[in-house]
Length: 155
Image (tube, rainbow, N blue to C red; front, side):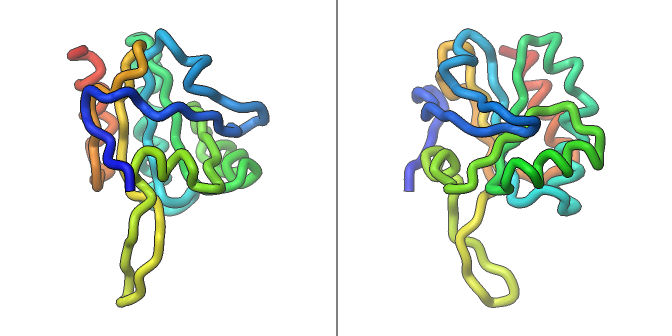
């Protein structure tokens, strides 16, 4: 497993996004990017996280930041999720988990005594030069979007 650390070059990505099309790290060069990885759309924690980032979207935009939520959900599910909760953040589909693996966030998890592979809830702050400025692992949703915004504003 790859371990991403502050100061290193962020792994590049090309991902399909809600509404069609794709988003690439190359197209975002020069912009600060918040990539937040979440396990599954339309579950309580993931919904709250997306709503929290959406509530602060104008402030992130004013700071020149693009917010992208990444999960293994197919684009059609992301479209429904976005419409259902009126989300304004970009949602990207990583169905193969290739990008999630490149960021070291495809991990072994366990629930009810069973182990399985899944996405670790984490957030990566990438500066305009493509360098990782901060990594939040094993994120607790409550207050997280505010914490990320404070980190962005301190850059």
